[in-house]
Structure formats: C-alpha cells, structure tokens
Length: 484
Ligand code: AMP
Ligand code: MG
Image (cartoon, rainbow, N blue to C red):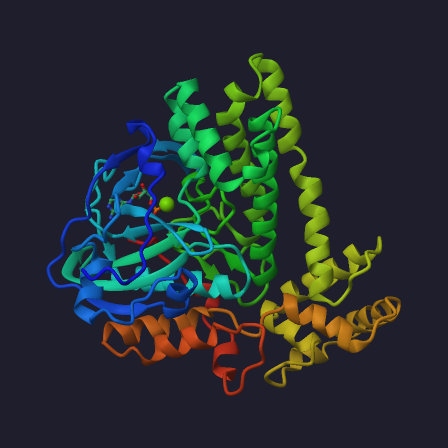
C-alpha cells in the first residue's frame, strides 16, 4: 500500500487494559469492490486517496490490507437492549485505529461488517450492502443537517454473500467517529465491579472528549453533567428535523454526544408523535415522542455506572447522581422551546409561546400535515399548493403567529433567516432512500449519487428537487429493519 494517503495513526484506546478490547484483524474478503467514497470527508480528515487505484482502495476499505500504523481491535461494551441488560461488544466491527488530522482532531476509523470477533455471540460478523449504504446516506444527511453524528467514509461490497432470510450481498462500511465509547462501554466495565478499571475509563474519556474537566474536583459528577447536556442537545436536534433513531439502546448512545448506530432509523413525514418505523419496536419504546424520555432513562443507566466514583458513601453518591439526572426535564423543556421558537422565527422568549407551538403541532397531528413541509410553508417555501393550509384552524393559528412575530420587532428577513437555519427543505425521505438502495442493488449508482448530492445542502432551496420534498405516501406502513 502506498503511503501517500496521509494516514496518521495514534491508537490510544488499544493501549488500555485488555478488559476493554480484543486485538483482532478484520477477516479478508473474497472480492472487494468500492461502491462509494466520501471525498469531502476524506479532505476534512486530511486524507488523500486521489493517487490510489480503485482496487487498492477496495481492499483498504475491506480490511484486506491494513494501513501502516493501524492497530486493529474489537471494543468491549454492554448495553440495555429494549430494557434488557446484555454483555455485547463489537461483534461485527473492528476499530483499525485512531487517525489524527493535521488540525489535531482525533477520529476512530472503524470497519463495520469486518467479520467475527470474540463478541459475535451467534452472529456471523458480517453486514449487508443495503443497511450499510442506508447508514452512509442518513449519517451524511444528519451531518449536513448540522447534527452531531458519526460519519461514513466508504462502503465496499465484499463479493461474498451474507445469509439472512435469503442470501444478500455483503458489505463493509468505514465509519468515522470522534470515538465509539458508549454508555454501554461504562456499563461493561461497571458490571465487572472493578473500580480501578472504571477510573481508567473515566480518565480516558475526560482526556479525549472533555479535557476541560481534567481538573474538576469530582470528575464523575462533572462528566455526568457534561454528557447529559450533550445528549439533551442531541435529542433536541433529532426532534427538530423529525429524526427517529429507532434503537436507542444504551450501547447505541455515544459518550461524545454523536448520533451513532444507524439501524432502523428514519425521518417522520406526517407529524405524529407516536411514529415508529422499526419492525422490532412493537410497543413503540423508541417512538418519536419517547426519544427524550429514553435519553433520560439511558443517562440514568450511565449515572449508575459512575456511582462508585461519585462518592465513597453510596447513598450520597446515589442522591448526587439522582439530582443531576432530574435536571433533565427542565433543561430539555427550555431548550426544546427555544428550538421550536426558532422554527417559527421567534427569538425572544415569551411565556405564551408554548401554547402557540403546541397548537401548531396539535393541528399538524390532526390533519396529518407533513412536519418538514409545514415549516417550509410558513417560510413561503412550499413546493406544491396544498389545500391543507387553507384549513380554517390553520389560518387562525397563522394569524396568531403573525401577531406574535410583529411583537418581536424584527424584519421578515431576520425571522426568515432564523427559520431557514432551523427548518430543512429536504431530508432523507424514506421513499427516496429506498429508491436509491434498490437501484444500487441493480448496480445503478445514479440515484444514490444524486440523493447524496442533494442532501449536502438541506437548508438551501435547490432547484428541481420537488420529488425529494414529497412525503412518502405509504409512510404509515413504512417499516425499517435492523442493520442485519
Ligand atoms: P446493533 O443492533 O448494530 O446495535 O448491534 C447490537 C449488537 O449485536 C452489537 O454487539 C453488534 O456487534 C452485534 N451484532 C449485530 N449484528 C451482528 C452480526 N451479524 N454478527 C455479529 N454480531 C452482530
Ligand atoms: Mg449498536
């Protein structure tokens, strides 16, 4: 492998005690073929793939050839999956190392679908093309929506079949993250009841993600506060754009505050707080409206792990942790209201705004109005005449809103600017994602290329994209499946 790619590995996690990981290389695959490469992300990472031939890139992103300086591991973690605790770990991924950019930013480079590890349990360690491309599309979409997320650098087909209900094309996704440390990582270490190991993890996380806490009097308390704040911001961003994660298990909650693990996630079209897409989420545990509640629940599991480090007196530690966890609702409510205010162009808080916002949402729910497009309509950026917006209740609401806007004493340019930063014109609509994935199965890369291009500028009213802004008609029946 030529070494002019600029890889600059410094693998700090692999130097942690053996408890935290297994040293393991990705398994070679038969016939790797590069399907997509994220050139923008490569540039951001200061990586240069332009002089590398396609077959070399294919074998690099398949893990057949590891770059110089990498040290490949599978990370140990646990997790509450749908409420049930399990010891997990990277069962089908290897972290090939941490790349440090010329701007001194550190990123995990992980190959997802790279074969069995000691954490694979009954799984085959492999991933399927469709779900890996889906993760690529949606994670990049989220990034362009200005929402913290893991990124996707490349997808390769392995040239091998993966057996699910039927044989499917195998694939490997190169995932880039500020780290893959999860709430579940803490749960794994805490379950071993070794305070010394927990302390190592705490210090590692603070050094890597929250260096400003290095000199805190009580690092565990401060970390809990910091992670809570990050997660409040994250879930509010999801609510802002109608994103439904789908599997908010504690192993899928990142300590850095990035959206991680795109399985059965999808974007809501018509506004319905109970929307659930995942076929396995029968009771709607991870429905749109439950996301903040589950975030808090997951943070409480995180807090439990930190108890031994918060205070030697367990009762005191529990009460300190509880106090922090109970700040969630108030913080969430304040920030949610601010976020929703911005969506309707308001910047100066007023007590009654909550009613104005809730009334709009209630109307959208009753009329099955599209969440994204309703805000576009309010910005005069609707795509089609829709009789729904002639509804008397909506027109009444609009009058109240216009009066409220007047009280802000700002120009329409000013409030529209605020709205345009909060309300995307285009999101990865389910029908467009499916269309792109189906075409790729037939080796037609045009739809996925076009979709990815359009999703680069979600806050710009791009020409000729009306098709991408239409809701999926059959949305109520749309189902997503785990990244199998
Ligand atoms: P996920 O649903 O992707 O969050 O995965 C949950 C757990 O199952 C993680 O420990 C994964 O590594 C593991 N896992 C998922 N799919 C497979 C597979 N095909 N083979 C082995 N482990 C898997
Ligand atoms: Mg996971």
